[in-house]
Image (cartoon, rainbow, N blue to C red; front, side, top):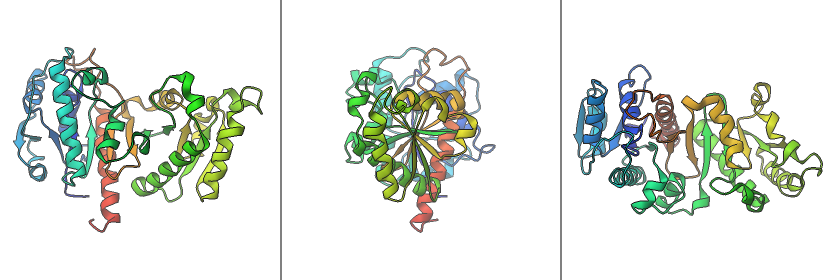
Length: 338
């Protein structure tokens, strides 16, 4: 495992970010969680620990390299910017802290001072009030790496399913117009390469869904399968990628079908996220593929309604940290740094 720590952003301090970060640190030994450093927010984390009467010492560090030495005895937090802890009471000040933490954690990864970045949940509407101009954190990460928004691919991954939405933050009415053979091929290629490089799957099996009910049923319910999706699958196969489909989305996620593929390429947001959240909500991880850095995130939101009530499940945050560490270890070994 790389000795560089993971960098974790605080998320919105009014959400469940602080409490699931603390819970992850408390589980560090039992769950074999790699060392991580929180990008700012020491005061907010201290107050969160006190609010839940948790034995979680906070130790501020000036450099991420110090995190590994601190991690066994205290939760390391980068000094430099801070804010208050007011669960279930989101405001612009908290959003500003969330944005500062996201920017700093990302910089640590792009500068090579952290082996990966793990992002806690944010509220995009509030972030827009303090200058955030991206559709989401996935697009922000791409821009931070000098890439266009569409260069990155969002994958949702849990213990039983991985799924990629080929179109993401757009109205459902626009999906058919946004889909193209080129888009499917590019994102399929990125997904296959990432599963090999970061997940150790030598020959990933990509199952591609249809757009329409019954995958179009030979044109009866739509022509996108024949005109757009099938040519993309053929092109991926020509490149040596094990792609198949298009499959009716209503049957693809059944237990016996899931055993036949490593990732599902889905045509739109909910087609991918509904099965992942139904199957693996408390362990689901959002992974950004196609970047020079590793980024994971819990696959859930800020949960303002339960923040501060002791109801937040840290499982997805623990899974995101574990997955980031595993991916970082594979990249480190591949580059001869293991």
